[in-house]
Image (tube, rainbow, N blue to C red):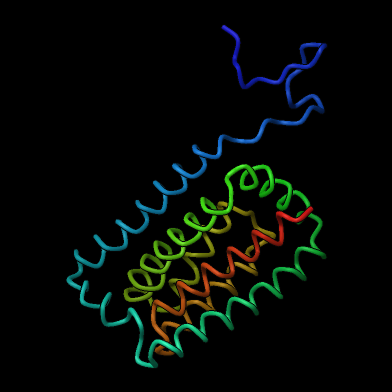
Length: 200
């Protein structure tokens, strides 16, 4: 039986023989990403519940500095993150591969799906890393855990950026800006960095 997704050339070669791979199905990427982030969010909430620390969620949601400070702090951190990412994107050799991979995966999805995935991802990551992990292991523990996850997804070369990103997000929560600030910074940074990579 012939695979409809296989892109054999006239010589019967596979996509690995210099031919371009077909992009992944956008619905599959959205569903897989949504499921992964749902499991991460669930893990964070169960971990907090297990430790009888669920009261942290409403307590740290906005933070002690207030709504306006949380939003402004999140956007400032996001813009700084984008500036650093843009510099790395121009200087790292692996950046071209990362951008090509992002274009192949995210361009077919459409803006709405990308925005939804980024928002769901930001909330899930913040509840897990900046709430559950950081509450038990502190800022250093949350940075280390985020670094390991990022290294699995992006590789070692992007580890310094991932660690700096995690330190900034964890620092927002530790400084009283709350989960709203770190989630806003996470979502805006990821969306702007993705947009930066999607432009050829």
